[in-house]
Length: 424
Image 1 (cartoon, rainbow, N blue to C red):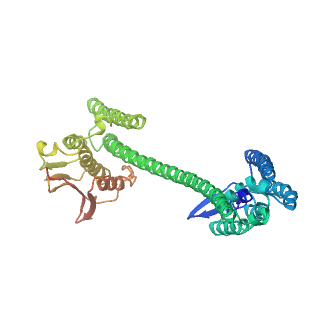
Image 2: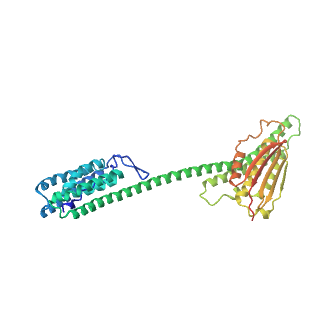
Image 3: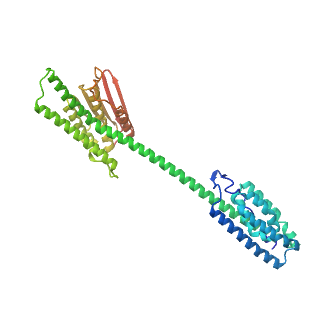
């Protein structure tokens, strides 16, 4: 049984507190900087249990009479040293392993502490250091059996027992090491996934804000431009009448203009309210009025003509052909026509505007708005532009897989969108 002491094989890895970053198989383990109260309690209990079990093992071996006199006197002291060294196993695993090496080789009472030391080596030291220390324990324990027993009859049994003892403890430490690495990897992956989720969430929120800004612009710019045109016409006629350059407005004309302005303002407020409802909604789609269709372009043209804007609207699309188009495509076509009419009204008031819709399934869909360029710079009272309309419109068209271009040549400004229209 001399060999049965299984020299506790200190876990071959530096303690977690001593190595704040331990590279293992490409994984950087972030280790705690010091022991917690739980760690101290565990270490204290472990030392006491090792002392108790060491005394039991020593008593059994003494009863069998396997120890020479000198070994029986030294054994308790070496066993106590190995047990006390366990208190520093987290911070100095290599030093603890070196201290425990002679104790495990010569003292039967160091058997329980030796198992903890060897397990600690596999858990906390790098593999090269762990294997070197394991080899040192094997070399020291094999010849110690005949030395302690005084005979070589049980040499093979002692050698096999020592190897089994050391390899079992080392395997236990390796298993604990693998488990901690797995937990750490899962923690790192979870943090990475959480960061990625937060990034995607931030991107989604930014995209939503941009979409809201485009929708607000598209919904309100048209109505505001109509209000500006009607109010400007009313002010112009009033100034002309005061200057004696034209007839005065009758009360019926003033009332009619005021009613048109009120109606457009009311419509603008309702459309804005619907956009806000979309922001507050939990889901379920958008309000119907925020889903304009190609057929609603007739209403846009009618509103533009009511302000005195000459608009020529022609379409090659039939109701049957556009019925199967996605609602996003309907809305994009509508917004392109709306933006073209609004820009013409703001930047080139009074010039003729041509709106054309053409295409078919499999051949794509083209929306084109043409208007003449103003002959003179814009007046001070003209409706200002934000410069965001065409930018937002280009992004909307691009999201639908199409392209948007605008050119100003030969005195004509052309806004043209080309959208894909798959065959049925």
